[in-house]
Amino acid sequence: MSGEKLKELGLKRWLIDQCIAMGITDPTPVQCNCIPKILEGKNCIGISQTGTGKTLAFALPMLQKLGEDAYGIFGLVLTPTRELAIQIAEQFQVIGQPMNIQVTTIIGGMNQVTQGGEISNQPHIVVATPGRLADMMDSSYDTFFKRIAFLVMDEADRLLGGQFTDQLDTILKALPKKRQNLIFSATLTKNLEVLQQIATTEPFIWSAEPEVSTVKELNQKYVLVPHAIVRNAHLVQVVDDFQTKHPESSMIIFTKNCAVCQTMSVALKSLGFENVSLNSRLKQKERLAAISQFKSNRTKVLVATDVASRGLDIPMVDLVINFSVPPVPTDYIHRVGRTARAGRGGLAITLLTPRDVPAIQAIEKEINCKLSEYPISEKKVLAITLQVEVAFREAAISLEDDDANEKKQIYQKKQSVLDGHSSKSHKKRKHNK
Image 1 (cartoon, rainbow, N blue to C red):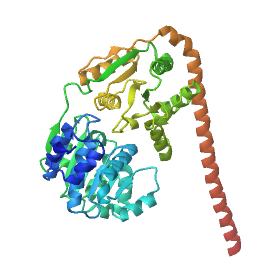
Image 2 (image 1 turned 180 degrees about the vertical axis):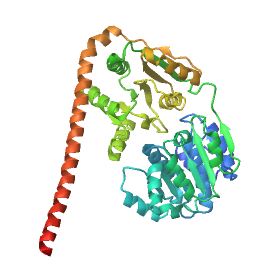
Image 3 (image 1 turned 90 degrees about the horizontal axis):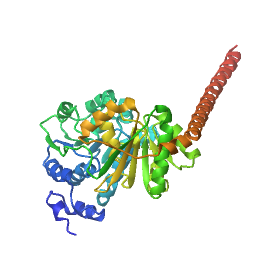
Image 4 (image 1 turned 60 degrees about the vertical axis):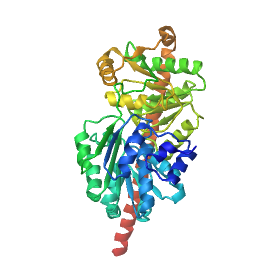
């Protein structure tokens, strides 16, 4: 395989060989349109569905430019989640292996002193979440970013959604005015004007957003739950039905927050459904372990918050379940985008009560597609309702006990420190007398 199509984009031979080694011979539309413009030195805004190769669309031209003029911290990539940051860093390392590229990940949940040392060593590429990087810049590490050539904002609509405003202000102030800005997202953001301002000069804008915001290979269904009180039982029945028919298939269940996520994970385990959970309350090591276990197919079920909805490259997800209707249509698009990737089929099922009808109608309008009903036996649901509710309540109680014990231990440690300090002070006063 010669990689002629990759060569037409203007990529050097060593990068083409790396792509071929990774099984990539045909560039995707976002790569075909954006890579040549980036190599020309233009700012770029790329809007393309999840799973279409946006990471390589910015990583390949950045590495080519780095190979021509390597120095210090050459590129900064910002992304909203820790898991996505780690994944992007890994892709840079794999592709840039022939040039011995140095990549550092700056995210929360890791030792800040160690990260400070890594920045001081001036790696070629820094991949970061805004919160931790802004903290580092406030601690005088901003001086290391004065000469970067590239700023990348991946999942830009989430970065500009308001959650990271203060941190982005801190970061952008530390960066040089003269830089190349590469901004990518899966959904056309309302903040397009803000993106153009960040780009500083007139950017090249390319959008692949189709009439239907979700891929045609995705089968989108709903389960009508007559009342929220039996939502848990409907979920368990859907999971049981699917695993019975497709025992080797994997699924992600999306929940609205960390508390629901943790409770559901514990309850499902007690009901015999092995799973791992992924949410921001977990320690970073636990989050990475959960992703590794799910990616390797050792566990078929991942219970997660929206931290898993963006950018994670998990190619073999067969089913996505929305435990409740996402309040924002774009959140729905990102969630269901975890399945039906790279031309494969997939199924998305959303549990909705009568009160959720306006929200699901807003989603249907956004994706220009009507959801159809997923058949489920109400008789079976009623038969398991009591057992399921007991499991969920016991799970909630056990987690409350765990939280109480953790808070107690923290209090005891603090008290021990204070008592020790008080004892030292008393001895000091006695000595002075």
